[in-house]
Image 1 (cartoon, helix red, strand yellow):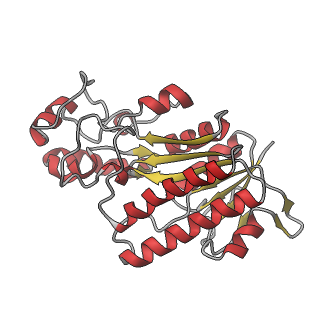
Image 2 (tube, one colour):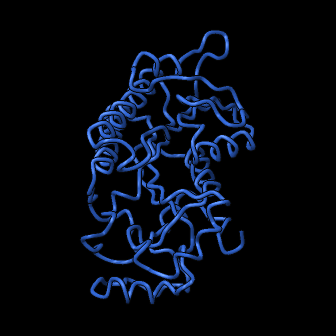
Length: 283
């Protein structure tokens, strides 16, 4: 059994990640400024912008535990507009630097963290270079939140250069949904523009958690970035029709399945064995 610290384990994605890891016999510690709604593992309250507190939670918490095998870093101000631009940037960058640095200081070599689909150029006021989008084109941050996420990926690259044994996996999660959110999906069909901002994508929190677990179990070193979305869109309209109507001048690089996501998960499928198991269509 491996001990995994999950930062942000009380949040929307964090709850699913904690449940997934506990369900697969991991020894999980939730580190979050907010207590969980339903405790399923030990919880420690910590301010991740304070490096000393991060060192403690990744090393030892009194008699509760000593030593950590892996870190899943999800804690953050969760998107643009939640707080002011500067507050979002400063909080998220400081917390992520502290987690990366403290993990390396503690000798932890298995690190997974939440990057973001926003690096693809959301909200696509400038259309994407091609469809489906993937990890292969340079990041296009359009908000302070996305800029911080972009710099987090650069931080991870340098920590991997400094620590050759380190594995750092950044997961560019799409818009996280829980089953109760699906009741609102049929309303999107009335106006495709409502969800054009992320190419009609989403990620079921349970599938996001699956991607986290598979990333922890992936045997590699160095930095890897994966786009993590569900296999379908939030729309009933065919994906090819949406692309043709809303982005008529953007090249489509291959034939699309009827409701296939435009946020390519091919790399995650190939390297992690990731395969979404949940869809709003069958919820």
